[in-house]
Amino acid sequence: MDDRWTRLAELAVHGANIQPGQIVMVTGEIGQEEMARAVAAAAYDRGAKFVDVDYFDPWIKRARIEHADPDTLDYVPEWYGGRMVAHAEEHGGRVTLAGVVAPNALDGLDMRLVGKDMLPRVKELGKIVGDRSTNWCIAPCPHPEWAKLVYPELPEDEAYEKLWHELEHVLRLDEPDPGKAWEERMDALNESAKRLAGHRFDAIELRGPGTELTVGMLPTHTWWAADFSTADGLRHFPNLPTEEVFTTPDPLRTEGHVASTKPLVLRDGTIIRGLRVRFEGGTAVQIDADENVEALRSQLAIDEAALRLGELALVDRHGRIGPLGTVFFNTLLDENAASHIAFGSGFPFLVEAEDVGRVNSAPTHVDFMIGSPELEVDGVTAGGERFPVLRGGDWQI
View 1 (cartoon, rainbow, N blue to C red):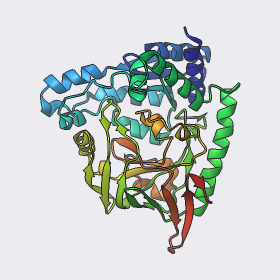
View 2 (view 1 turned 120 degrees about the vertical axis):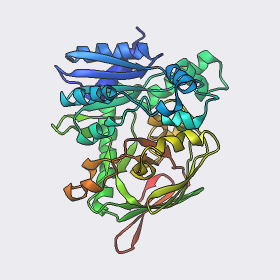
View 3 (view 1 turned 30 degrees about the vertical axis):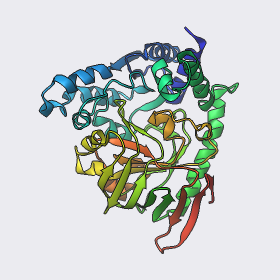
């Protein structure tokens, strides 16, 4: 096996902090087998009791959209979610492989039908994350088809090598000790989150090209970096790479309009370009895009709460992803290049007990990027006083 796969897999398993005796669930797509095998080996080396790999095939999803009764497309067998719940009840670990393997699998389909089929996401995942019952990590998996999408101007072999090179850089695999490098970056991100949390702003205002948005905060909210602990106290990094600090907002208090600054790529590979959203009273009342907007509208139509926000994340310019200027067409990477917001489920562990019931509990979570060097972010106190938070990608607090 190529040593690159081994090092990448070891970092993913390190991020998830897999423990001796754990059952490990690895989720990926057809085409990511080499990475999945490397993750299994790395997990067993750390003492995993059992590794279970679950593959999603986007071409099977295409067959369903083309041939199944449209009225059945929102159906997911209960045992899909039940399997994840049972795994979480045993406090297992999870590694999810991110990246593109079939960028054209759903081309030409009715996007309204594509959006009705939520797979590969299951609704139970939001509660599992909120309960902090598992230690987990999402990590990118290079693939030639992904490379062609990101670098269409290059020959296929060169594109694939460039994708590897840039992923190794943003993952800090080019450091002598990637684990230590991530510890140091987490220290900086945690410090930024701590400073933001100390202000307990009543609202965050965001202004940039196509964006004039005010996001209300819950009274007891805090900010975190992607440096988690399970309910049992087991530390893990849920995303690698990660460059964000984030909170969960008041789902009833978003006002204004916002324009995406990078393409949104849904979990099934559908690419939505030029997304524009207008909010009133916390709800997205208008959703437009230059491409494939019906897929997103259909996904958000499953629940009224899905049209409200569950996350606000800020990203400074000192990470490794944004300065590359690469659009990776993958949310794991692109959301850590730029500040972003997310429709759907929030994070109950980011508020105190009295506000837990107010956190968005929608069965979906869809991030999209709104950050750029031009984005200005201010914090607003309950008394109406404004403080600059981000300017030109630099923290002001």
